[in-house]
Length: 128
Image 1 (tube, rainbow, N blue to C red):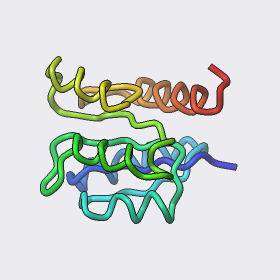
Image 2 (image 1 turned 60 degrees about the vertical axis):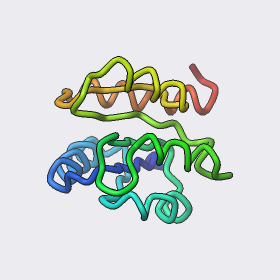
Image 3 (image 1 turned 120 degrees about the vertical axis):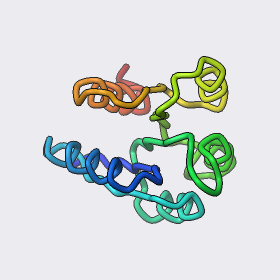
Image 4 (image 1 turned 120 degrees about the horizontal axis):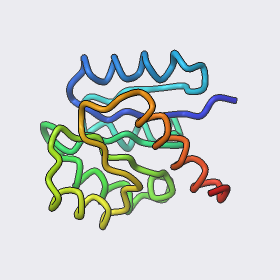
């Protein structure tokens, strides 16, 4: 059974491109959320194994989404990989403090995102 990846990014073109790349591996079922207000609903219906989360979004930002997921019974157990256009060390530290398992700076290559996703899935299942 394919693992489920939820991409949370308001850059629709980027999210759709990443979705296409991930689904092209044959290993993942991918959904995209482009509006921060819809994240929890997607988490509860789609039940992702990993969330790829952009920090800079209109409306609620990525840090607030992390906090919201941490306070949600289903969301709190899902590994979050931050994907951001900004490689700021303060943002990186804050993301890890909020429970992110990795912080990737856009643009990244396929191998980087795939290794990060697989590592997050292994650690979640205790196979690290």
